Length: 97
Image (cartoon, rainbow, N blue to C red):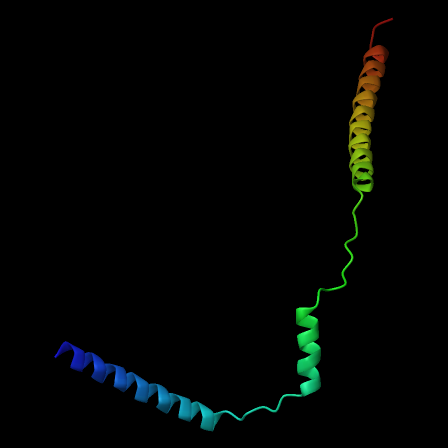
């Protein structure tokens, strides 16, 4: 009995599938493919691409990073030196004679 129910359900799915296929076929217009396009696409997909990979030199990146670090450290040093000299000058001018 189980086999009969299983067979009946399979037949129902087959008929539903075929009805769906018929509705889709009637709703969708078939497309005529350009054979030249298909051939060129096949060649492009099956052949290896002619790509050359450019090597990036890390020297330029290292120089930019180094200059940035140097500039930052130099700017901080200049600010500290200016602060030091202005405090020293201010302390020297307020000293009693």
